[in-house]
Length: 167
Image (tube, rainbow, N blue to C red):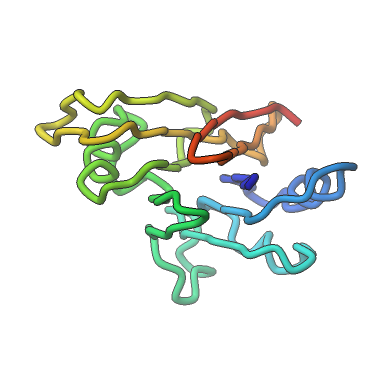
């Protein structure tokens, strides 16, 4: 299973469409992590499930979209949030602690516009929360920035790999 992850399009939804139209790209799901919900209105996902959360810049376009979600796909528990409510620009600890408390396998956030991926071990303690199982954390960066980037979560036989790429 391959999941594409986008965040912070800020008016550049055509870049999401560009990635989806690339040869060989056929995601099982798409996550959008906020700040550009309006950009999704015209994108043709070709029946691919879309999971989305609102960001701090989506105040008037969120229309009932929550600012975080927790779903299970292919046996993998995924926590997603834009990240602004966890002050991720000052550090990822509170966000990681929340994901660990929920029992997530994968945690996705945006807001910083800086792509990153990190895997936490099962024995680490973050903000007083013990991580009980391996946790993969990823920020896809910003698809709307001049150095546009997006993320990918690959799940194969119970193994998870997170990565990001520049457009």
